[in-house]
Amino acid sequence: MLTGMMAVQPAPGSSKRRPRPALGYAFAVAAAVISGISIYVNSLGVHLYRDATLYTTLKNGVVGAILLVPLLFLGERRREYGRLQKPTAAWLVALAVTGGSVPYLLFFNGLQHSTAVTAAFLNHLQFLLVGLLAVAFLGERIRPAMWAGFAVLLVGATLGLNFGQLRWSSGAGMILSSTFLFAVDFVIAKHLLRGLSTLAVMTAKMTLGSAILVLYSGLTGHLAGLLRLSGTQVEFVLLVGLVLLAFTVFTFLAIRHAMVSAVIAIGMASPLVTTVLQYGVSHRLHIAPADAAGLLVTLAAVVAILIMGIRQEAARRPRPAPAQAT
Image (cartoon, rainbow, N blue to C red; front, top):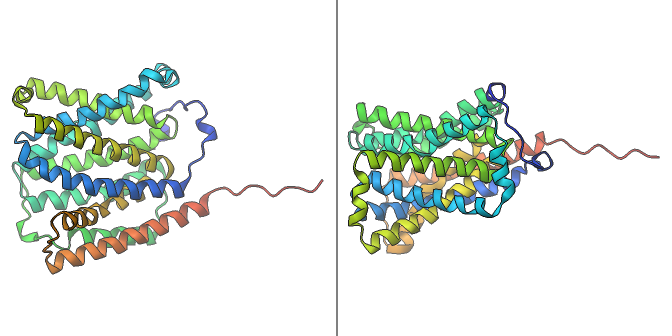
């Protein structure tokens, strides 16, 4: 288990901050809503940015830069980094690699050599991988009913896919690798959040991850596109960066307080939000029956997982000892 692989120094006062599962699930729902908005906004970005690597580097860079600002004013957070031992620092670097940089590059490069259906299917496996890794390395207890909810969720997420277009290729391998790395990243984040502050873990992932993306983009010539950006493109990437920041904050807060396996599964509700947003903007929506059925099944599964997760974690919380008569 990860807990046996490294010792994470607790943040000052962290032992006094008990996880609050109900709050964590509220954050998870908020993160899913923001993710749905992000999907819609990013779909517009496809038409503004032809270079996906530059686009990803810039929007992640916005988040990484903003997260550095609190460190300028919070001395305790700077001292928290100063107290880190080498093993913990190494895992923070691993967090930046597995979630803040490399999987983005793998995913977008994989899309160029794969079909959209293949990419969607492999990406939908992420929450199942998180569940398996959380059980193996974090000791999370996922009851059979929750696994059944995960299975129904996978059915709902893939119900409208044309499986005849599934293709295994080098691109599919890169997308699967990115899915696995993102799953690993969430598990590492959950473990680190047991001993470190949310800001410290979040900043390490996004700021260091952005630095890696900038380095890669510079070495491969993608940063040259900066000189050709229009005012509209700059404004758009700032907007997308703020949306990504909100998603990152709510996701990390959710992971801190609730089971990471359930949090990531709840995030699968984001296409529902995107669909509602598309209808609200255009007032016209054409959904195939299979896609509509998939959305309904997904909604039912997410609601069930949400309820089961809250009940399971509430049942596990230690109850205060009864007061003894004097």
